[in-house]
Every structure is written in C-alpha cells, then in structure tokens.
Amino acid sequence: MHKKLFILIIAISQAMAMAKGPIMTFKTKVVDLGKVDPGKKVQAVFKFTNTGDEKLIIKSVKPG
Picture 1 (tube, rainbow, N blue to C red):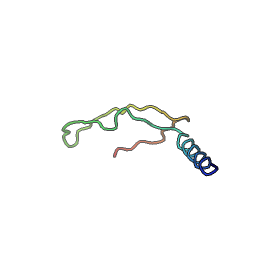
Picture 2: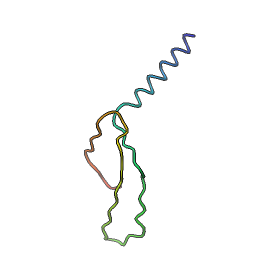
Picture 3: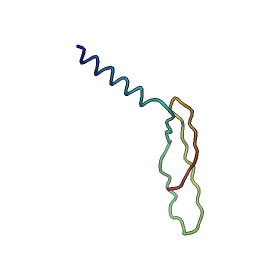
Picture 4: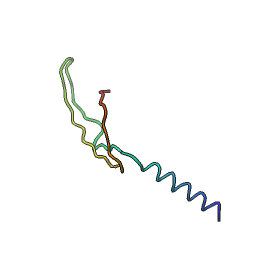
C-alpha cells in the first residue's frame, strides 16, 4: 500500500512540475508560402496563445 501511494505522489508531483510556466501553443506551426522567387521578401503570420499558467515573455525571434 505504501509503495502505491509513493508512486502516486511522485506521478502527481511530476505532472504539476511540468504544467508550470508559460506554454506557447500555436494555431498552426507551418505556413505554405508557395513558390518564392530568390530575393523576394515574404511575410507570414503565426497565431499563438499562452496556455501556461505564467506570463509569456518573448525576448527574440529568429527565422529558421
């Protein structure tokens, strides 16, 4: 009985630890820009929501 309770407590603790902090959830992670000619500038919009339990702060963004 004690072993099962211990395992349950560890599982709950790990689940709670993983849920803390900001979580950036994207509506879509890929945008198809079609054929793009070399040197042409293109633009895309990525919509996201902070589904975490703390404030989300974006410090930088890089293409990649």
